[in-house]
Amino acid sequence: MPSRSAARPKCSSSATATKYRTVGSITRQSEPGAETGPISAAYAPSKSFLNAVTVQYAKELKDTGILINAGCPGFCATDLNGFRGVRTPEQGAAIAIRLARLPDGGPTGGFFDDDGPIPW
Image 1: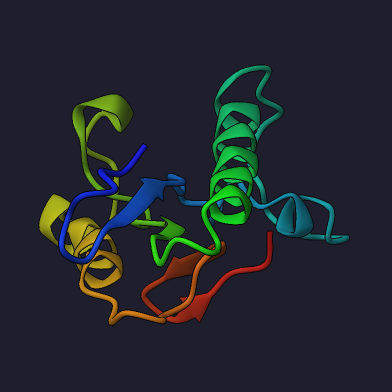
Image 2 (image 1 turned 135 degrees about the horizontal axis):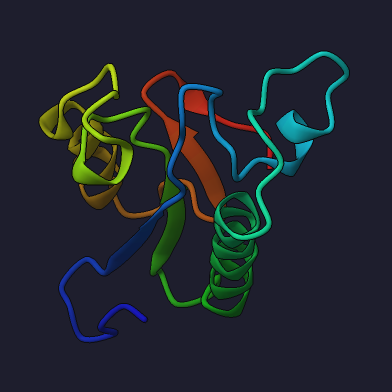
């Protein structure tokens, strides 16, 4: 939960991607022929859950000026994936920084990557 006392409060969550692109997007997971990777009983559903919570917070805080969004850092090389990712952690962090710097009145309740909005 973001601090309501911050000068320009923002909150973003990280809906992690894999090489299959945005495993947290139910829309993309349901597209015929979309490469979403192997069936996962925990990882992909946890990202979809995080997206749902992001939407709930955005709805709850819509009249407060607090912007709540989810960001997809892309497939970053980290310990979690044995450093197989194609992006650096610094590249992945760019979306979180962009969302944190949104102007007052910017988008809220959205899911974004470097290219812009992603379907939920």
